[in-house]
Length: 141
Picture 1 (spheres, helix red, strand yellow):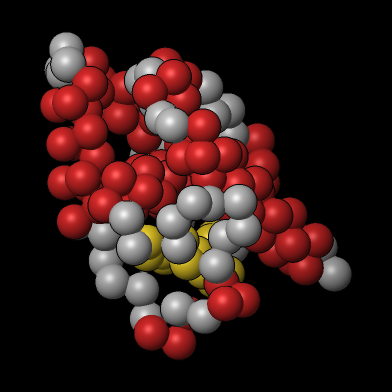
Picture 2 (tube, rainbow, N blue to C red):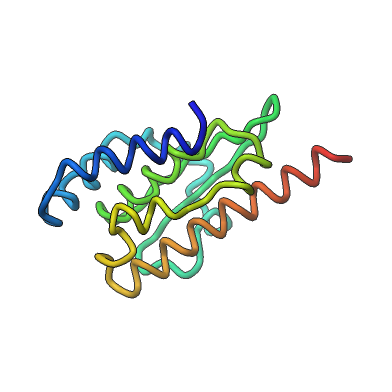
């Protein structure tokens, strides 16, 4: 499944909810399904700066694709990072770098987050893109 197809799947799922409290509940459920990050990656080095809550994000590059794992100490933030991982993990660096993140606006997420959580979301996306750039450059050597 392409990144665009996964994004459309997310848009379709969020469109089933009329109320933002239901969408938050769904985000929390997504976070509960996030696989546990290995303890070796719960370090200061893996923390995303710019997030109000603590978010650990790790990326591994294998056979041309990036595998993302993460965790957070806040349930909504954990749901947000889970959503990003669901859409982006398993894709090549170039696919991630070419991805359009408008789905976050389409589902209304950016408009319904506190300013600090919205900043955290931007920081998560930027960190994933940095990993993708680094793996892309490394693969070209």
